[in-house]
Figure 1 (cartoon, rainbow, N blue to C red):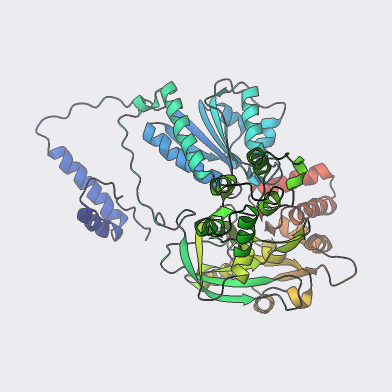
Figure 2 (tube, helix red, strand yellow):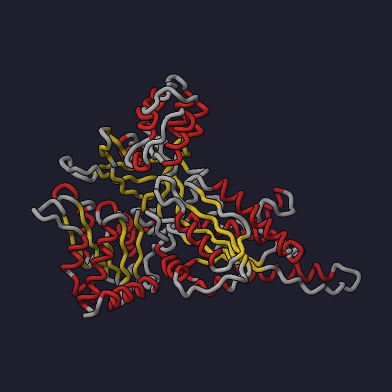
Length: 581
């Protein structure tokens, strides 16, 4: 039975009455709720002693289109938040994914709010590529009848900060759109500034178009939904680690771990393809080094903030400029920050900052996201993570990943991790259990596909399953080897192709496996297979994409343009999905 919506705590009843009503509603059937609705409506009508005054025809509410471009879900979440605010003001607001919209449809919107993320080095999110390219094309429609505003999301650690939002904002203006208010460019700590901008922008638009008067008779009700009280980034759940095991061999150059956490009592209901957000802690030794470099050793409150709340690794150009201004030192060249961290910056002028100056310089410590490597149907109230500890050297200093080393080196079974769910509705198994799937996941990119296979096994899906896995060495880095081999024996896994890059003189990668199997890849795609890619965005995903274009050109006996058009069609059909980072 589908869960019924419950009364919110703001309903006009006493607390005990809300609880009693929710107990009844939660176990009622759709038929019972329909009967009760009709009964209460009739009771209300019968209670009057005079004929009801004819209601005035409802005023037309001002329309508002809220368009989002998202890769990780943040832009979509903000778009839905904007819809709630707009509805309370009386707007007839709708939220639309750029993947499902065209510039012509956007140009027909009287009022347009755009929430756009920038991906990688200044690229649009994958699902927004078609809309973005059409908007930038010479034949893009005019926006002279459209009021608009743009909220841009990005990360100052990247040179092209908020580039897509900036370009969309400028393009809409060039096409004749009337800007409601200036664009806001939000960093990783986007929640407060973004929500403040949404409120101010919609209030300003409301003053211009009179949505409040038109919607004055609208009563806005937020029904409590299943999962509404689930943990969030600001309020994570402390999940106990129930299993913590290293998967890579002792002689491996990689340090990869299987980590299982209990979600019992959390309210987290994930689906295969979703990610678990982890709120990490910084390396205490690095926090001490930062304090020493700033001349602030011994400040325990500040040390706690550096370990648990503030980002002391990522270094942005803005931080470099702010530091130079505070200390009176020259600003290094723009490329200086690449590969360096906050400690390097502080050591250029040690002992120059106060505690207030140091905390003002730093960003909030952002969560890290890990694709969930399990299915709830197989493991119950647990989530499994596949975590590779990141360690490297840069500019003469050893470095390490914040969350990956925190999880793998400073946590053990029985410890707690602060977690929350980040849903990924655009990286799901096919609704048709008989559709074949091809999964390309080198290294920890294997994680979601382990969840896919557990799910398909649990539901008895009939579709064929092909996994292409890659890593460095067969002997040391064959992650979940026994499970995968068991799935091959049971024929849940129809085919397993592997590419171990260091096992032969010439390096071999997953894209090489795809090319070698190009005839079968082409045949599976023609049979309607969905193809999934998970892992590194900078190299692997681009190389796999290029290999797919080569395969379609070679096997389809067509040129590069036709192959690109075919792959784009597969993507628009929802059969080419990527979860890359």
